Length: 280
Image 1 (tube, helix red, strand yellow):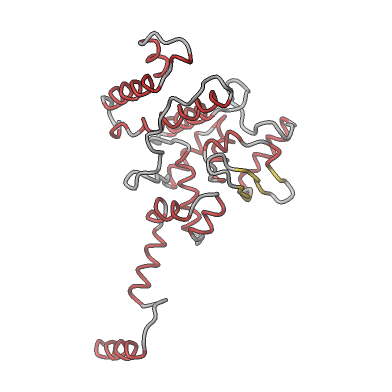
Image 2 (cartoon, rainbow, N blue to C red; image 1 turned 180 degrees about the vertical axis):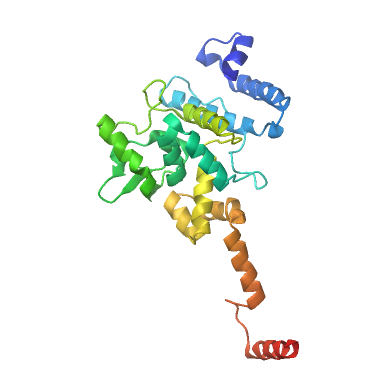
């Protein structure tokens, strides 16, 4: 782990020694290392590193192991308008599914719920309503209640429940290597490893949410529908995801070319008809 190497180089062994200054030094150290590598993408992954560390230290604060969180966020993955949403291509999703192996349940949950990684690893069996075929979850980031239909491909949930016979408070996802609840950093690491097996670059968990949202918009759901379904804001959906939807652009093109949906006065209609007559 890069963090362990950094701490060892600074002879830091105790949690309370990790101050904000130390964390800022780590960010600079990590950025310097990453940008020397091929395909480093300008070191944008450091933003995600900071987000993961912020969450880990947040848990330490909750457990009263530290008085305050020493990690300052460097924005959030997906906030950049230029490097925001990164939906997978259909061919990439096929390759990821074929290479999933032990990570199949994690892959299917990410693929067909649009949940963030923190909510996928936090999901418990009691949040699955088998009668309504819905996942009932209070999201961790925005603290909004979402009700997500269980996609037909998530029959794997029923298979897993039958195999484990879990209690309602048990976590749905387990780490195949430890048989303990999967953590957010472990999910991120396993999804990147899955991407390497499938030869899909940068297959981090949030890209599945991006793909799910773009899928819904492409199939006719409105930004409002998607925002309410996933507990997000309409502004976020419109800013980060709508530009990827060809159908929305084509609909706008038809409106501009035909005048559909626009208020056209009688005089304008007469002029348009006359112009079409001259063309014919």
